[in-house]
Image (cartoon, rainbow, N blue to C red; front, side, top):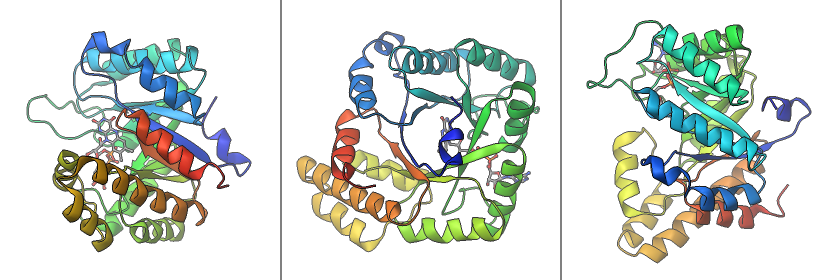
Length: 286
Ligand code: FAD
């Protein structure tokens, strides 16, 4: 199923993001996580893709195939392009088709000093165009409510996003954010720019202290005072931080759901407790 079909009749989605385990041997053990995630009946599960090397991609594809065949849930496969040439992307595309994958999140990927850059696809829009035109995948793209870290500002960001949609991205999934107003303001700018595809807000419940430090260095997300107070208070109290982080994420999600969002994309970090707690918290909310 093409995930874009969900929104054609006004439906909205609940989706989870997972990553393939580092060790090949752990691919079998991820079943426990998948058992819980799939029981919660998400509309799709997206599987991340590590930069560089075909073994990374093979793991992603294997996991996506398992999600589709064993769990009967639609997978979305992330694919980056900065470090791959056209022949390599063709190879991945054929493997995806063979695995029955119909949906791809087309990404540029981050610049890496340790992996040589190839010049066939410089931006995600190049990949989006290639995958939608040559392979007829349902293509999704990433977006950044608080700007991509390399961006020259929101005007450029929106221009490039519009190019990505024109190149074939039918759905956008956002970078995580903790301030819903940043998302609402971004969505309004997209509307003004005539970007009319579904934009799924990406929510990551912050439940571990180490995760907070990583978040700060990795993305542009602002920490609202209300959220900062939770961190200051509970950073050293594992259980309290889990509860408070989950409650904060739930309040974000409910606010988004009552504000006409096309769905919720949950960064699960492969922790089934997170998905279960969120689903429990919104089970009667339509
Ligand atoms: P692009 O859309 O190409 O944008 C990158 C930058 O270039 C932006 O600043 C944009 O404004 C600018 N730009 C775009 N087009 C042009 C142009 N024509 N001229 C000049 N500037 C331009 N990374 C992984 O390695 N694996 C994953 O699985 C993964 N999953 C992700 C999932 C989501 C939902 C998100 C939000 C990010 C994910 N990432 C992943 C991270 C992503 O690869 C990085 O953020 C990367 O730096 C940018 O990727 P992009 O596809 O957004 O790039």
